[in-house]
Image 1: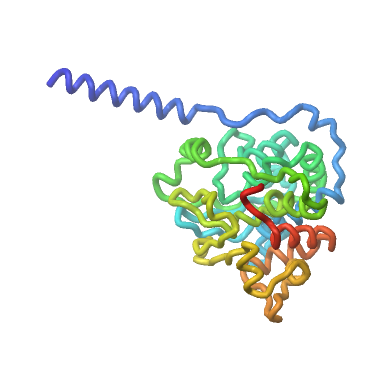
Image 2: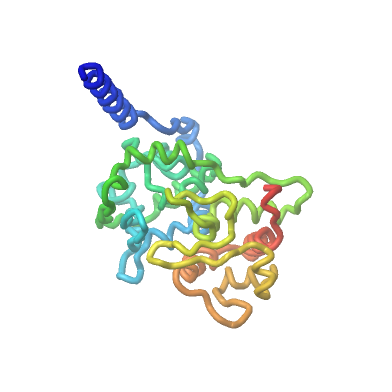
Length: 301
């Protein structure tokens, strides 16, 4: 009995020590110091913020909220999460951040305090943004008027309220997007891939999730019936789109206007994507996105 008691005590001590170690385990890497010496382009940063969906997600216009002052709640199977205030307010927004804080948040999903962000924030798709991309975005966000409105705290039950446990989630599921150019493909196709698989993060909604809320690699673009709030996103696989009467021109037009080939209009989250995001993109980029979506072989990229 004494041996069993000692063994049990030892396991408890090891488990406790492991838990403490996990909580204290630092994550991420420091951004390069050269970031602070880069000159950001406000216009390019604003364009990239549109492409990345920042305005659509972090603005609650239906409730009369100011742009980027915090978005509508995301009701998920793991809890309710609120897109935070991204204005220059020093208390409730990013006014007290440095560009390094911003870079770690956007590309690594880590707060200025070193805490992991929940993956409702699609930071995995932004992992390969360049230092210049970050500098441009940062310059654009510095022009956003401060709004002293705090975003509500997330509402999650145990164990999903334990943010330190996200370190295990990151170790198991976090991966960088495949945005690399493919030889033999056109410049437009590769630009479309960079947007669709990266900044525009189309796969965040149009890909099924597993039990832990991570995207299923074998279901990329195949649709998702479990979006926040009980919503769904259809398949955007080339074969399914073609069967529905879509082509490059009609898809590019829909991303610009929200009007589908049948004369219907996008609703819900996709309407917001168009109204506050893709509707502001250039014709060349919209065609590039449509070109990639309508002709991609996921085995090659």
